[in-house]
Image 1: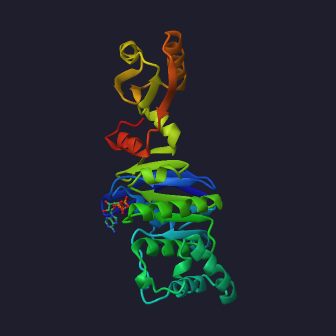
Image 2 (image 1 turned 90 degrees about the vertical axis):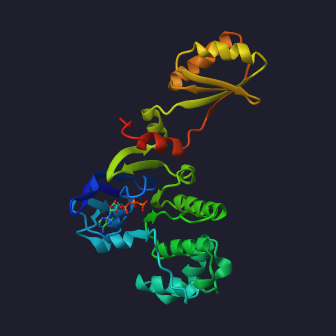
Image 3 (image 1 turned 135 degrees about the horizontal axis):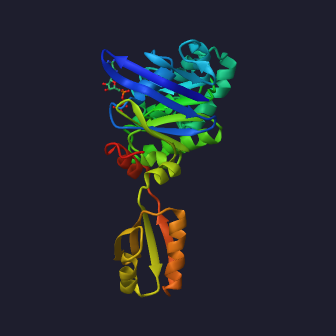
Length: 309
Ligand SMILES: Nc1ncnc2c1ncn2[C@@H]1O[C@H](COP(=O)(O)OP(=O)(O)OP(=O)(O)O)[C@@H](O)[C@H]1O
C-alpha cells in the first residue's frame, strides 16, 4: 500500500532523507520512530503530497505522489504534527467544512459526522465550539477530520504528542479501532511504549537513513536484544543462582522476593534447552517467563550508534 524507494530530500547540502526505502502492506500499522530531526516529518510530508522529494519515489496504493497527487490525496488521511483547528467553529461545522471540501454531499455528511464523532469519543461535544475543547479532544477531532473521506491510508505524525497519559490511552484505543477497520496506518512517535501494543512493524530512522525495519520481534532477535528471564522455583534460590552463573548465554543473575532474574543472550532454542537442563538438575521450577522487551529498549539499542547489522 505504501512503497518508498530511495527517497532523498536535500536542503542545500543537507540530506534530510538519504535513500530511504520503506514498504508497508495493506492493513499494517507501521510505527515510524527516530530521534528529533531524523526525517520522520519530511517522509510523511512527501507521502502526503505536501513536499517534493529531491529524488527517489513514493507511492500510495500504486500512485506516485509526484505524478498523481490527486489520486494519492483521495486515499490518505494526514494528521500533521502541528495542526490548526478553527476555534470559532463548532465541532460539527468543522467536520462539515472538511467533508464539503472533499465533495461529500450535505445529506451524507449529516449521517457521517455523528458517526465520526462517536468513533473519536466526542459525541457529547457535538454542539461545542472547537475553542472549548481540551488538547486531547482537539487532537481527536483532527483525527476525525482525517477520516471524513474514508481513506484507506492514515499518515499520523505524532498523534499523541503533548497528551496526558489518559488522553494517550484514549488515542491508542481509537487507533486500535481504525486498525480493526483495516486501515493501513503509518504513525510516528518518539514515545515508543505507547506504540508497542498496536504496531505490527517498526521502521527506525536516524539522520535521514533507515537503520532498522521489520516486525518488532524480528528486529529484537536480529539485534539480539538481551532477554530478561524471570524464574520462580520452590526454595533452592542460592544454589540455583550459583548453578546459573556457569550457564552459557547467561550474563547477569539477580534475585528478589519474586524469584530469579537473568539476562539471557541466546535464542528460543537455547532458552528451551536451559529450561530442560534446570529441570534435569533437579530444580523445581514453578514458572519460567520471558519479560517483554519493549520498543524503548529496541530503539535505544539501535540508535546508540551503529550497533545494528
Ligand atoms: N525547510 C527546511 N530547510 C532546511 N532544513 C530542514 C527543513 N525542513 C526540515 N529540515 C531539516 O531536516 C531534518 C529532518 O526534519 P524532520 O522534521 O523530518 O525530522 P523529524 O524526524 O520529524 O523530527 P521531530 O521528531 O523533531 O519532528 C531536520 O534536521 C530539519 O532541521
